[in-house]
Image (cartoon, rainbow, N blue to C red; front, side, top):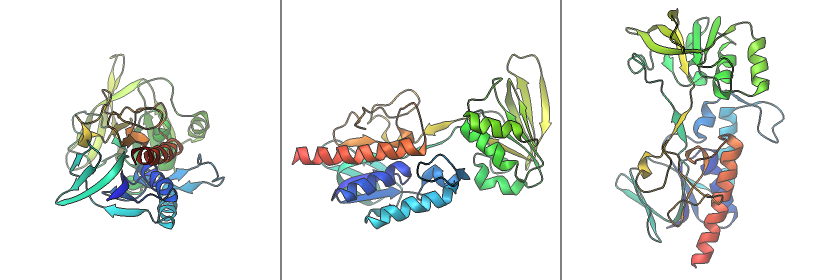
Length: 304
């Protein structure tokens, strides 16, 4: 029996584990892939308070994991298949294994959104990618494109420009949403060419990506651009399918909580990118995790 179980080992889940164990609770993190979540797929981080020098996402994820281990946060590598969250004892199923806890923190994060255009699924992993830091090196000296206009899209374009000979950034609007520091870096990079007011309507190729069909958003025309690689960075989908119908969420699948990270079920909290909130960053995920662990501890004390 655990006092608190974190479902997901990203910044939110690991931080919740650290705060729970420091508070004297018996805590464990259930993670199906690797510690750090999306952080581990990020090339560089330079907006983490206290880290004045740029740090890689992998290194930061390892530091989080080491910090959690220091406080004896148990990490269980397993895939959750079912949850029973009502009542005083929550049951988390991983196949035939059952983990019981007094409280649960849902911290499953989010995954990249697809474009949902013809050719995308067929060419996924054959030139179409959702992680520049994972797959960018395969396209060294090639011509690539990034779709999107936010921080992640611009960061991906800047990363790819280090070793690709040409990088397009394709955006539906005539200006980016990314922060100004990133924009200034992007516009100063001669290898990067923005394609404004445009959307991809088709991804072309047989055994590998050959080109994309780009259409003006006002419908005035289209063209084909030859590419070796395409990186899609148009947002994320909350990984909340496992609790659909159990937990209140918005139309996008983001879990609704109050400021104490409480969901509509007593003893169940949500933290990080899975939660409905205005800003999804590492620091806000960690703040969510700390708040969730503290409020879970208060919940247990009040119950006792």
